Length: 228
Image (cartoon, rainbow, N blue to C red; front, side, top):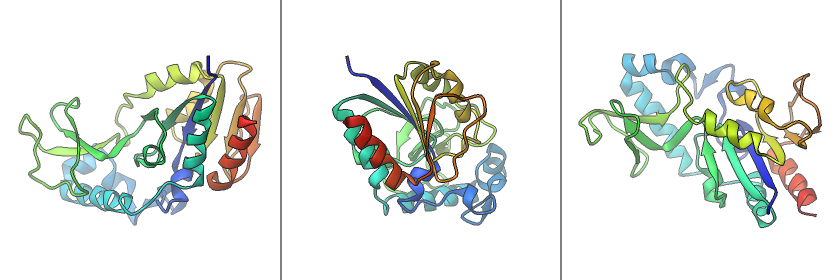
């Protein structure tokens, strides 16, 4: 049976493809405060601003490509059962060819009903407009977990993490919960790799190999090592 590798990825892996991260720019995301574009209150207050913000993010997504970090993870599938848990809302892992990707914070290219969260659609193109309705006649919203909302995929992510034979963290500051808490579900003794130029290891986590590198250089090196 193939060993199971579970990978947690954050904004750092996508940044190298040209997707800006809000934590690197004074807490502003493309010049907007998070409270104005990424909360349910913002949506209720100014849906046009929120729709426009995500339309621009989505439009950008059609212009970027997976980088060496994404592509290296696909190589791991030759010898391992690889599961990716991503905090990112882009589809760069899927575009690179990864087969098993769990999105913790939603998906930018999908939209959902405002009255039934189970009604999720893949958007045709990059633009979601006011007046675009779900099958039940309500406005569609971005299929994104906004700040302050529940993270429905966290439980499947915890289960996956607890089953890992090897756990790899890439491009995340480990500051965003509940994702950062996943480290506590890794079985004791499981090899743990952390790849991020600014990574610091939480004091209570043992058995960590730290690579202070970007995803584009660090992930291919680690993958080559694991495939030996």
